[in-house]
Image (cartoon, rainbow, N blue to C red; front, side, top):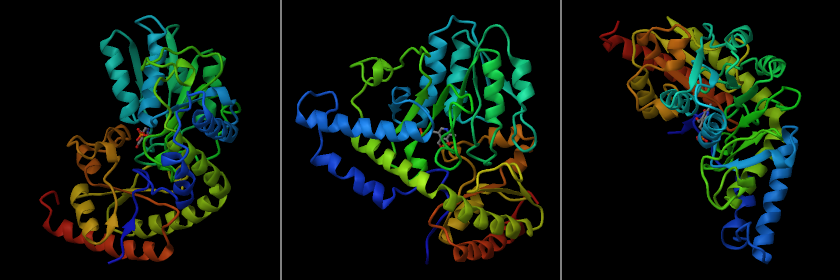
Length: 382
Ligand SMILES: Cc1ncc(COP(=O)(O)O)c(C=O)c1O
């Protein structure tokens, strides 16, 4: 049985070229980038080259890139680091559909005496920039709105939100973990002050990412130690991971146009095919969405059962965000879009990647209607 992976929003395979670029940095060029000797200088040079490549890709300066362990750490560093640099009672604006790596630190800060506004979204998961402006108070220190949603793929109007924040002199952060490398980003043109990314969503290794911090922004470190990464993120740099991340960025830059054309074709075919199933509802924005995201609800069935049966048919899919599938609560993203708990529980996310083919889509389009029909036959929810 062919195995078809369609959960690329959870993670992607490491590209062979990325693995090859990383290889020498494990046992051969293994130095600590802080050491003064040859081995250290070699590692430092690799870091410098990677940083320059990545900075250029988003229109930033090299010193504005702080390497981290990924999206979760970059988000925590932003939310907590900026809050700790401001008095208790300071105010943060975010949305109801952010990843838990934003909502959880925000909720934790509320317990420490900070104020947080969680903005509503429309039925497509879109934040209205006017709502951002209306929520600003004299205590607001930060607006954090994600670039693209990890469950439904909706792309938020972040350039517009960035403009509003700039007008009011408030910092703007975006969680770009799902969009980075897939959608063009220029931090200066889009008025982004801080931006979180992760390598494993773009064919790079797990456990590495960066936080872009515009020059001049003061942020209290979360991890104190040896003063690495300008003292903002202590801890010996993951040189092999960072080299791999830079290679993944280089490939993403080269392939972005081609990948998006390929993915859009597959996405269209998949959406058209699944839409033919009775009572199948497309979630997320019809046009303003990532080219790799397909998200549907099928009334009367359990998303989890659907994922298990698709797995048995060789198809790797998800009910929502990989990080929340262990929870029995309905997705906070889907309920924020107005879906009932029951419909939210009946959801399926397919996220496409470079390696998917039209033949695989044909197979998936044959299997999903079969599985949905079988589950509906035995469903007590019917
Ligand atoms: C939007 C978003 N933010 C943050 C994260 C967390 O990233 P990481 O796995 O690198 O910690 C994810 C991971 O799924 C994500 O989709």
